[in-house]
Length: 461
View 1 (cartoon, one colour):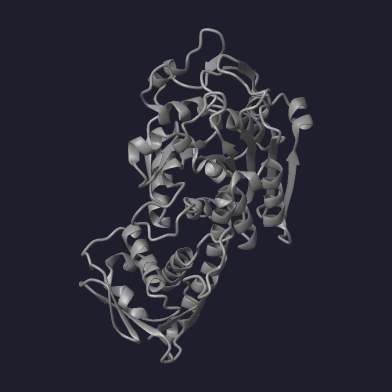
View 2 (cartoon, helix red, strand yellow; view 1 turned 30 degrees about the horizontal axis):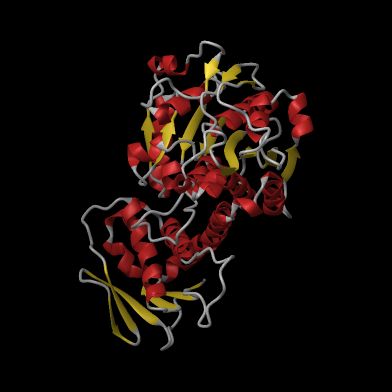
């Protein structure tokens, strides 16, 4: 999509106007988009409005749009943003809405529905450069988010752990101060990573611990650590998922895809901060060597973990990744991102990701930043009284709770047992936002959320 400013539109362009009535085509050069103009609207509502412009154009197979810049001032939420930030937000959302995953589809004769050009008119001359700067940044941000969506959308047959390592190397190619390496089975055995190795032992594909380091800050400065769950396909292991629940489980590596492309984006934008991204990549398959319910795994931390269920594998691979990142990098802050629990969807539906942290101030701060970025989140508590759920009679800890209640919290409590009490850390369960929901105004498949939040956290002290 090419976005231009203050240019005289041609007759081929469709004029986008706002009205409270339903969306209709007025004539060959005009679409009226029916949009309510609430007195108060959240950033999420505004984000969906902007995306709806592009999605409506797709419906009418309209590739060229002209929009009066001043129409966006009708929405009060825009007053909280500078013209540069507003331009970045609008352009980013349009580019995300224009994306579709078509890699495995035959192109139709009349092509894919796509907006190829948008012209914003009535741009104030004094704001022209700021708005253009915002649009230029949006192009970089949206491209990387869409790359993460593509990575998450690729089927598990084409994205085993080593292919995920190759994807990380591709994302980092040509970027200054960003290096990538991967630990295979041999190195992980030496480090005692029995949790990730246990999860991956039923697959023909070797697990990988992908490590990406970006040195944009001062030498010796403690980094921000982003840790991603990279389960490239999740059958549930011997605790096999029902067939319907297995659909979409090629996207169980979405957390890993997001942290790979967040650190690549930070490098592109030359963020002045040291960042490390670690992805625990493994396939939770059914095979003759699959780990079993009742097995006891010894992780890198030295803790003995009772496997009560093989479908609670994400927290196992993350436990080794969290231990590794603390010992190797002594980070200033750890944010782990994972499609961890179905219970998160029970709690919040498909509306928002869940934040869990022992530091409630940190959790609420991340929540606020998520709202500002357009990636909605909501905190849940990690109180000590939940610890008893993970007690084991035969090991140091169990990988699931004793009861079916509080599954998302239990997942967070488990991860917290592998993070030093003095280490600032938050866990984001992105299961609710793994796939686009009705009303998101996005193509089917991965949403790319909360990558804008991760970028905000990476860009701010």
